[in-house]
Length: 159
Image 1 (cartoon, rainbow, N blue to C red):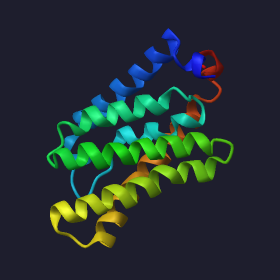
Image 2: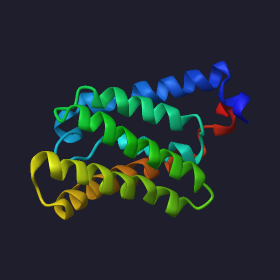
Image 3: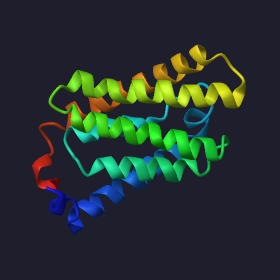
Image 4: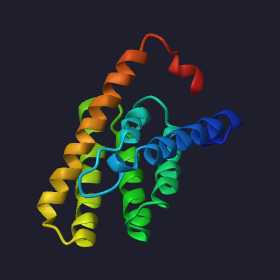
């Protein structure tokens, strides 16, 4: 399996996902950064359900997008870590889609919410709920997109 992940096709797919994540985040900075956020790029966090190559792609895309975050190094470190943990959790729980979809909501809500509460001097519970709510909206969008593409794309070709 590891060898398959290092194929040219897999690396290119990871790079495309990273670029898409970063572009979607940077295109909509008002939605992507701040105590209230709903990154449309986070809709991609459900891709590990069907594409294992999306795990590194999501992490790298988030890392690149967070390099331009107004929060600075804290978002690079903690925001990227939250997305990596969410992607790994989603992949590990791919056979239990509801639990898998909860991974990005919980991971970002706890980690990014805590980080933003410190950065903006806001109550931790408030920022955790705000980030988790935005993440939930993105995950719902991601689920709708996956459902819409289910019969139209043969995902096995990408694996």
